[in-house]
Image (cartoon, rainbow, N blue to C red; front, side, top):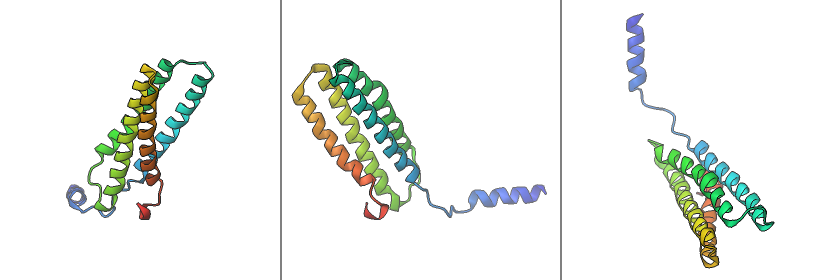
Length: 144
């Protein structure tokens, strides 16, 4: 029986992987995080507009609740190994989105901290570019 177990272990270890990596769960995670963090931000912006929080508190929400979630999903994407060639473009699109989105949040934080309306408009432009990249993630895989 020891020989059978050893032979099985060697066969399994050296057998080619017949299934390709499914990147969909990671892409779905990116989409879920964006939906959740955008919703959180909208809720906090509403509080800001009503005078319940100030600009510094809104910037803190971005830095303490939103950006860390983006970093986690970006790290998960970077950690993926052996992504099949047919899925690499989807991962690249997700990484592009996350980079743009992170930049837009950082720009927004800086603008809020300085009460700089011009910088807020620039953050809006960067956010728009990230949203365009995000919409590509939601397309069926055959259209990406």
